[in-house]
Length: 148
Image (cartoon, rainbow, N blue to C red):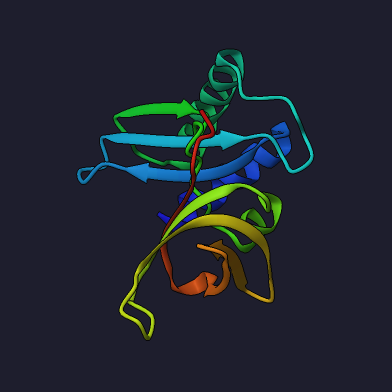
């Protein structure tokens, strides 16, 4: 899966997109690719963007010998997952939900608050009026909370 993700990431970078996430079904039949615009771009992902990426990845997968049954390409949505340390810096000021792999000293694993940024592999989230430092490597899952 890691080698395939590298192929996808490289292909997307050449097309002006960034890889947000790759999900494969248990049998490898369904392959989901979530894409976004690079940092600093205000344009969203369109259906045409997804179709363009799907066509290109289909060709690349054929050349690379990557086997899959069905390919889906989409935007990450309003509740975009945060995966890399750069994501935590990029979306500073946004409301986030974070679930840690292990509980902290107080037994808490889930945090919802305003992301203040990230530095040195540590994301800072303001939760109930206090800043909480969370090691990015210890985060099980993090997502933006849609502002609706």
